[in-house]
Amino acid sequence: MKDIITLSMESSCDETAVAILRNGREVLANVVSTQIELHKKFGGVVPEVASRKHIENIDAVFQEAIDEANIKLEDIDHISVTYGPGLVGALLVGLSYAKALAFSLNKPLVGVNHMQGHICANYIEHKDLKPPFITLVVSGG
Image 1: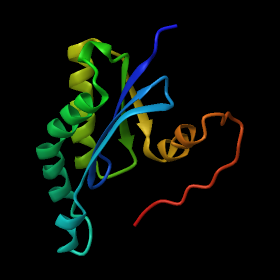
Image 2: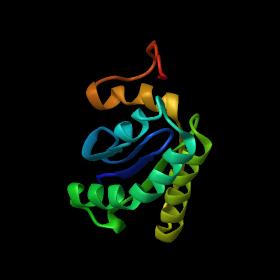
Image 3: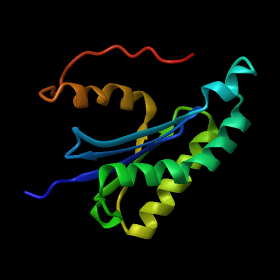
Image 4: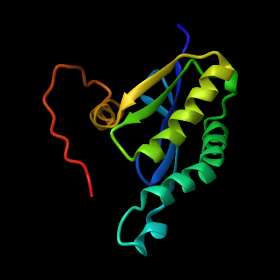
């Protein structure tokens, strides 16, 4: 059976992230560019600053993830991206990049709810986990 390669993008707040997974549970790459130090001087995340930094970082984060996973673009089977909740401008950067990439590669694009992503991250750590199960998600600064 052919391995399924997923490229995932996250830009809902102040971190630009790209992960590449094999068969939904094996992480081939996980690259994160954080903006923590930049926003510290403001006492919290400034949405406009975060959005602009995502624009500056997203291509480099994407390329680093591709290199780390040692895959070619044609190896990607589908692309997933956070569509909300989050900072609108920040989300638009990741969503626009993922949408353009999916279009150019003729690959399916899957929108992911940020909170559901937190829950589903458990599948990576706990390989035998299968629904149904109960979980609690506490998120936010």
